[in-house]
Length: 110
Length: 185
Image (cartoon, each protein chain N blue to C red):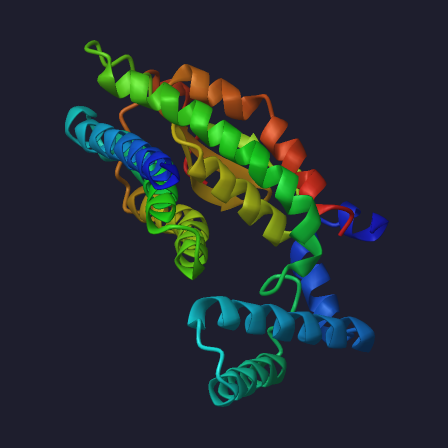
């Protein structure tokens, strides 16, 4: 009975994670330019990854595997913003201009 | 402390001072806590508890501590153990913010009209150290709907997906909280 409940909770987390991953992929297709697409990737690598890994740790049962999964989550939370920043910095340096609602408000390049 | 806040290049200065005159007690404490954390991580990741294997684990942890000390990278940036306790409540708050922001971005993406209003904004970071600024910039990036493009002279260049996301950064609450985590460096 207990196993059942834990499995269902695990599956619920995994499905919520899948939902956010699909939303992120949909955002990649729908959003207009590279800057806005970074935002939808941000949903995938924070919320979707967190829900899926938490779901996996429920599903795997409480053991050393749980610790490893949570460590993966912690590493994702440190590395993904760093990678995003490297990408953003690179495209800004290359002079790719973001599509903005009002151009005059954007600050000049430092 | 008063001196560093009055200097524009405070982060780099503090770093240099730390390298030139490391307090020996501080150094030993850092090395010991690094060894303990490494070994606990080793125990959790390996799952093998035979005497021989554990001995190898202890030896490799000591080797890493030795190399880190030799390379002189065991400073407040590579090993920010002083942030441990103040970081925990901040992480809880940050997870909450990430969740709220992710739901907002999800609504924007799923909405048929696609109501985006992308904009760039420049925000001031009040953190004194480079480490604090990195924490702030990375927190902005982790929160869906906003990401940091560039950090320069205590200013962050941020791209926001919607007006609401931009307003969220401009309230400066995250900035205050990161400064609190950083503490009186």
